[in-house]
Image (cartoon, rainbow, N blue to C red; front, side):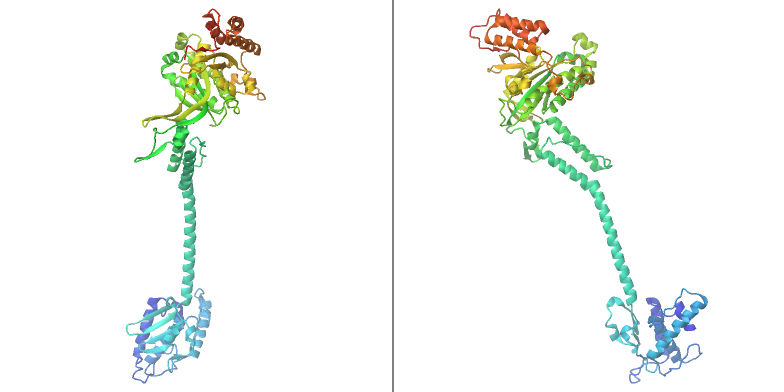
Amino acid sequence: MLVANLLISGSIGTNTKPALEIAFTTLEELYKECGGGNSSLSGGAVGCRTIRTDCQDGVPTDDPTCHFNLFLRLFIIKNNGDMGCPAINAALTGSDLDSSTNTALECRLDTFRREYSFANYSTSADCETQVLRSLRLLDDWLWCGPEAEDSLRFAELQEVTLDSGSRVALADIPFRRGSAITNFLQVIFIIFLLGCSSYFFHLDAERLVIGPIGKMAKLVDRLNKNPLAPIEESQSTGMEEFETGFVERALRKFGKLIQIAFGEAGADVLSKDNTISTDGITTSTFVAGRKMQAIFGFAIVNNFNACTECLQEDTMLFVNTIADIVHRACHDNQGAPNKNIGDSFLLVWRLDDDADISKPVGDIADDAVKSFIRASMEVQASEVLRKMTESPKIQEAIPGYRVTLGFGLHVGWGIEGAIGSMLKIDASYLSPNVNLAARLESGTHQFKVDILLSDKVFNMLSPDVQALHRKIDCVTMKGSQLPITIYTYDVPYFGATTMGELYAHEDPDMDFWDNFPPRTSSTFRKRHAEGVRLYLEGNWSESRKLLEMCIQENGDGPSKVLLDVMGARKFIAPDGWKGWRELTSK
């Protein structure tokens, strides 16, 4: 029972190294007391001085050999695994524990008695299958030998060596196997943990950094290739409060601002007119422009100076409200706003470089005229502009004033590029054709019409739209020696006071020209056309009759201008009349 209690309590012998070393040290002391360790003096015999094979547990004795033999048996039983016997179930209590302990103990004792001999301190067990692989006290091998350790790897061997040379070695295979499994599972868990961490880190990095930077890089690349590429509004992702969200929104705003500031003419400036300097990439104005073809349009605000004097600080609101109407009408009809010059706006409808401008090129010329008609009607219907022009100051300065615009259209070549210096750059167009469009815009004041277009633009109109225009004169403009036949479109006036009223009568099944036909009748236009033909042919007396009828019908401005011209010469064409005259005003 003493041995059983020692086995259960673990007070003698345990696989923990400190306890094993204490038990092994005690075993060595007992071996010395029984006279062991003198094999060199006893002819190679190992063991105690006297041989005892009859020592019994629980029987009092003073014999040091029995003390050693019993402790050796206990040491081997405790440290040699289960020895093929059932394990002691320490979880049991009372009689169940005693039964389990006795069964296991008896089995181990029987196995020890069969395999170990105290006569020569040797075992018949297969040493390479034992947990206790070798045991040496002083110079004597009392259990197996060093060859039993050869099959073990270093990590599987647990040993205790005393200063005297005594040594015990145990095969720690089950523990090491469990430790290896534990370590393996720990590695798997760490790999899984690192994998999850890496995955979630990648998601956060993609969502917070890589994704936004990638979108910004794509946006910059798209704008680099096409500075006028559409910039979509970023979708709300919840990342707007992060730094990358701030940068992305700022980049989109800068891109839109550049597109607004440079416009279509600045596209080539932004994409081509760049040079490398010591300070990085800078836009250079000292490069050649690009020749191109376009329809050039100028829009002017009538009576602008008087309005600015009356509106003062509200002038900006006044101008920008008009600009918004004009620019949107142009943009919605294939055009591009280019330059704002106080009371006037330059608008451009680009054409292919090889386009034949002597005939219609798609419907772009129709759209150019359409945008001016729309802008003219919308400024008259604008509630904001009407409230501003109803100001007592404006009405006192210009009684009955309402906002009206004058438009000039011409087509031809132009030089597109950067104009200015490194301190200020405008992307615009230079050409006599641009100047001619400006002259036509100024001519609307003289002819009292809303729109003037040159014969070159007229030739690009579709036949149905041409029929809605009327020829009003043939002139040479200042700065040009070539006579130009000029045409106009009589913009309808509906008396609308809001945009809703303006478009209330619009029929979606009808096209623009049917919804907004000229305010003059076809009969009037035929009579006027005949009067202009006679005027150009030099038959001024007959022309006078027809044009006076036109004035009587609606006070027609173009007819009055021609009557004034002819009246200055008493309605007799000058000798050598070629069918055109010099326009006396810009």
